[in-house]
Image 1 (cartoon, rainbow, N blue to C red):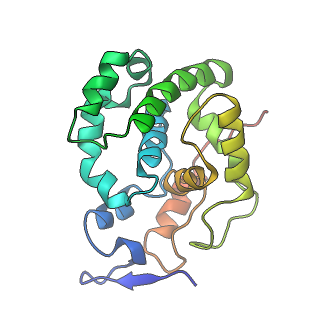
Image 2: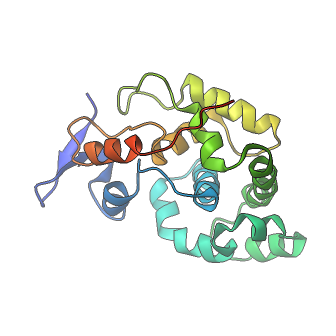
Length: 201
């Protein structure tokens, strides 16, 4: 059974969301389907930056990331140059990791290609929704996240390993990983039921 905790407000949540800023993120964002290409691109970028770090670090720096990366506007980030890389490496408000910074710029270019070929990022990523919903908090990768990672890497994306992609799937509602006892789980389930899945390959 997934770990849950009941807060001082009397609300039962997933155990990792006991304190801020995780609580608000959990209640209002985590697991709810994302709307639009830039939103998916931002989440891929932030999950990549999170690799090896705590999500709290990312949450605390998220507005700095948004400022540094032009609001994660795919077209704008795709035009970043070496001068932008140097600027970002000097920005103390973000995580100054050259490989991750360059990956975000690369992935913006690959995202633009994918959108042109497949219609939209949401349409593409939701193809990897599992047929059977996994038990909450029971895994860090899946067959679907492995396949998604492989597909993205084949298309030239970087920092999109299977664990990172499973975290993306959890965060973006492709799987509902809220604990069964969590107050947010049924809200996410309702939101997921409204998603228009792609019907073709």
